[in-house]
Image (cartoon, rainbow over all chains, first blue to last red; front, top):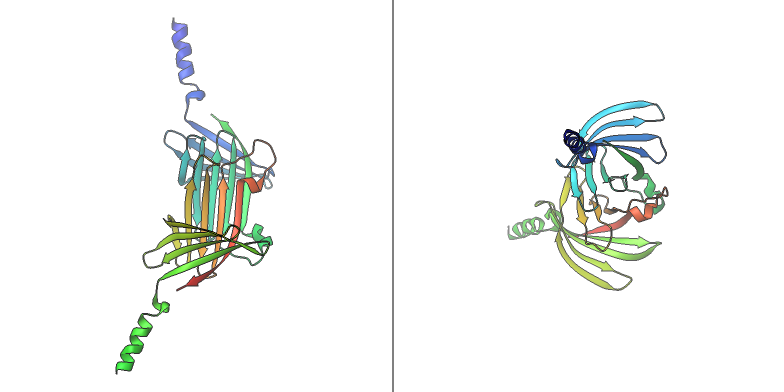
Length: 132
Length: 139
């Protein structure tokens, strides 16, 4: 009987039942990693660290990210961030189900040729894993 | 004297003093005009209403009258950032960001679809679309 209660509490307190986890994402060129603390029940995401693999440097960020839409059906989150100084607008799409992160930004700089669109749009795909 | 008053009223009521205007934007695909979008902008009230969309391929005009959500009104650069979310169950949910730059008279439209690949191949066009539109101001 005690063993059963013990197992029950072990399961209840296990990470499987936790809504808080660390989301670690590696960019597809493997040069950059980003780490986030996610809390599903509070619906909050904090960008905690950035790791530059080219220089082996870790930056501590601790930046709460503005949530634009929390899509529970798709287990995904849209966040937006604007930087008035650099005239940029960054959208993050966290897909916890597929364990992916898409980062996309626009700069308020316009070019005449459609071919140069890559200069003002940055788009990256990250592969992620959940660390509980 | 009457002439002076007349000139004064003419200047006051001229478009130069108007904060309300129509922002008409055209999208070209391979130098062919394919789409137009029309917005009513009020700088004073800080509102943008998407009034019409014109599909040139099918000669179709859609009436929207949709008040857009303003994320940031950048007075210094005479620009507006608009954000909208769509999940109509027919396609992947997506977020659309529109940057209207009245100074340069351009619209940058970016759509990010929740279509993250399971495979390693990053099919950029499936996930995001970016287009720059040429615009003009009608006062």
